[in-house]
Length: 72
Image (cartoon, rainbow, N blue to C red; front, side):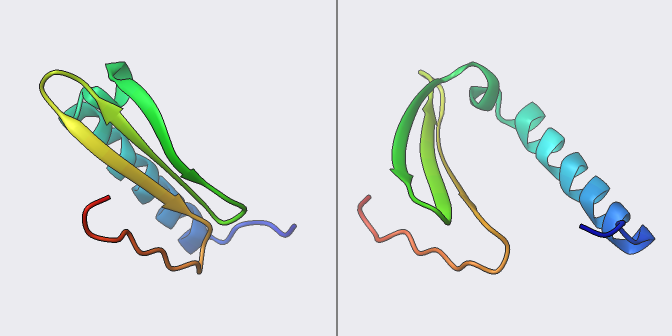
């Protein structure tokens, strides 16, 4: 693997800042119960739940589209 460019490093730092902001905005991400919804080679999906909030988290590899059907 090659060395990251300055633009790639800046993009990664922006992503990390955005993820930290989400965790601060949604405490359930750090303290809620966790339920796995889907896992395969390209995606993972899980739900974090507390009495106050429920969040669906979907992560995919770069370049992979994912669709969550209504009612899931």
